[in-house]
Length: 468
Image 1 (spheres, one colour):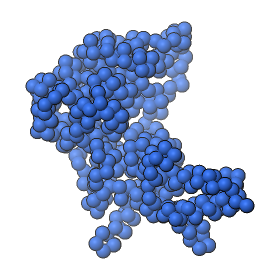
Image 2 (cartoon, rainbow, N blue to C red):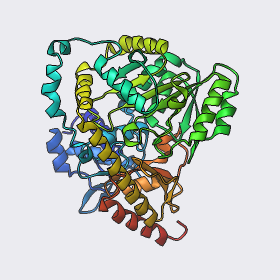
Image 3 (cartoon, rainbow, N blue to C red):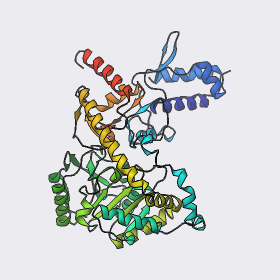
Image 4 (cartoon, one colour):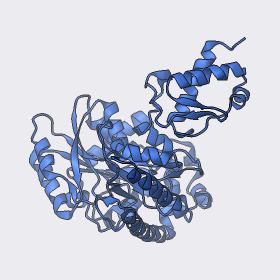
């Protein structure tokens, strides 16, 4: 007697999700009937029915004497199947990939520096110092603006960038992503037109789509936003839009906005009464004196967002918003309403870290390591025949394309078969379905020999196929 059909359907959907998420890459062998039956505590006949359905759906194929294997190009599951959003190569997929800790995969699409770069900022060694700052306060919600001593530290940090701000102009957040979320909640209503760098930060796109905004991409050039496109959009009738941009270490293109362009962006904002939201999440990886829009503007038309997730720890989750005083109070109210407060324990921890002279030496080493890794990565990609969008001196990412691939998703698929996870360029566009030849590469991971070996094999096979 076979198991109920509902169990078969459940297992079919489970395996389809696991395949879409890369647990079983295309071409890989699926677990045996005996193994799956034991794992799920069901009859072998149930697993036979599961494999029959997967075969009929074009997801798996039998190989005589060897078992069942994932098809080379399995179809993507529908979004409404059990509420799943696990489409291969979409925004949620990339987010999930960055949260995995599977050492068997090389994650070239990761957004963070290699873990070993941050080892000298060991969070455990600061706990006792944090407790000594006042353990009683650690049981409360804290201030709506955030821990005052840390905001005082940030006043000095911003001054190093040439940005003058008081503690009442700074709101602490759970990283840059919560900062973006608070800004969007304050300014954006369903149907509002919002301008963004394109390609750009995929998490920002997701937040704007959730808010119901109409997202308009401003093409990113090697020296910053396309000013003609920006002015064309700012001229459009209606409510003056926000423009979200990254002046330095742009994600994903690695480009920096040229100083003369930063000046022109501010002139356009003045002319058309627009507001600029500048995300500077990689500030600690760039010279303090590098040109920032907020430095030129002094937070008049600029909302400046910073973070320590990349330079200290993503687990600490401390970021901040700097803006003019009245707006800061409004944003602090929104933060209190939606999130109650940020984490004072995390904020006190970061304050202790910044109070230690070790942090400035740590960030200096980070910049040196990044510069070295960027140079090596540029040479490696050039050696493999890749075209670079720009050639930064130091950037966590490189934006590159291989002429043999018109669609970076094809390259990502080929690399996935070799347990290498890439971030194809379509993820960083407003329309994720468009064909994009570019991909984002993490410079700290490109030195792994698995990448060069895989690319040489893939390119050799590609060139050997007539008409490819």
